[in-house]
Image 1 (cartoon, rainbow, N blue to C red):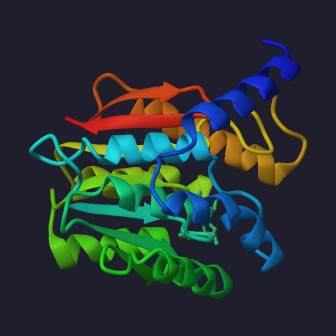
Image 2 (cartoon, protein in one colour; image 1 turned 90 degrees about the vertical axis):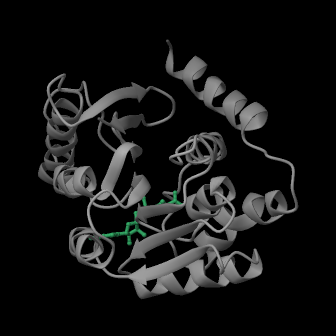
Image 3 (tube, rainbow, N blue to C red; image 1 turned 135 degrees about the horizontal axis):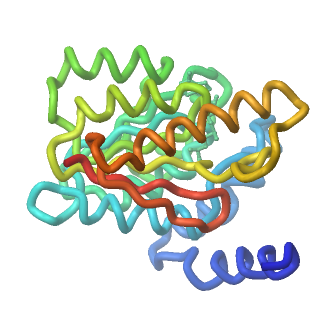
Length: 232
Ligand SMILES: C[S@@+](CC[C@H](N)C(=O)[O-])C[C@H]1O[C@@H](n2cnc3c(N)ncnc32)[C@H](O)[C@@H]1O
């Protein structure tokens, strides 16, 4: 596919698969621009990825309905969290983890504006430590859904902890599994930081895609690549 056709395809996906049809759509449509004006980086998922997250969450509960307990690593301005919250079962809860105070404060205001604070709880902290603390707090097999969108170099560490936190049949989803400012199939990147991210995500993909590992996984090749994996 040519780069022009790829860009046009991404625009098409956003236009056709990026809306849901409730009043929250209006808030989500302006969230990216408001977040960037407030000084947050422009690195949130796209609308079509948001809708895919909602759909996956809505079928990841143990009864085939929405998740009852979910966790997201990397809140940023709360965009993906609001999509995830839409897919939860009634009474379900998303814990979203963010260490940057500017991002956390912006996201918390978005959760309040959306009337979602009964469903979304912001945990200030880092991914590895917070997932480890959830093992003590809630126990093994206590989550239905995990979304990874924080530090790419830590994806393998997150996934090992997520394998313990998820119940059998629960879902792990991870963003940027094909690329970000690097691309997975490129030659080694001359920028050591980009190359370190690329190599770390490659190692994560190979681990989670392994036929003998704890997950049954596939990679959806839209945008920057989304791994979707079911805990065996
Ligand atoms: C790609 S952005 C998340 C985008 C968000 N999921 C969305 O689509 O709306 C990554 C976020 O991870 C946060 N972050 C950085 N280090 C982290 C860590 N160790 N644990 C959890 N989050 C981290 C960053 O501050 C940033 O807000």
